[in-house]
Image (cartoon, rainbow, N blue to C red):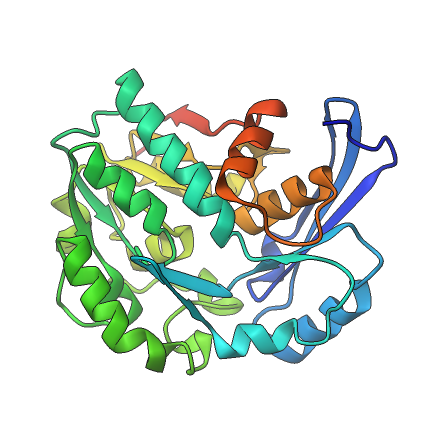
Length: 308
């Protein structure tokens, strides 16, 4: 594939905190790419305005701080509130990261298991939310992990861990049609809520060897100390890494690469790949995998020495 040498521009509009804003200019096989992340602190009106403002002016837009889609089994559910944000975006592809998660994160787990870098087989894993990372959920089970799914624990504050994809799919089919019609802020931290800590069900963090999934769920609900744990996540800033190190985390694996001191969200990376490809919308999973290989985009692994 020959990428155009004209500079690409990707912007991520996030409902998350503006304190996490970042930008970078990168080179991918001779293709110059400018990446920006702009948080709206949970302001839905501002997010929609920015989406419309940048429509047709950039190569791809990332939708951050929320999901457009979640998956369980072969069924996809659309968040009504998120869909409204992009209703008037007609010229620029908008990516929420869900397509890339299914390919990138599945590939990462399989690679970690095959290389033995992380002991996936027989390890106890807490996946804080599986409906937005169904590829990771499937890959963990395929690799022989003993997985606790925290969708009800951390999404709905119901002390009911799930232990199988069958149970997850059953609960998703029951609740997703209702949940996807509610405000996203009811079950996902936005804006300043991302900076507030609220320890929730700490026993599930402490009894598992690996904590995986959405970082805002991990950060908001984790106990103060996570001694010797392995974290598999993304969207981690330098300050977040310092916090995890102080908590005693042994290893941090980000599913997206570390760029300018932080890992960007999967919505940014999916927008990046679509822009490099010259696409007008989400790509197929095999196309994402081909592009990841072509541009040598890899996950990031960092070992911590604990700080007390």
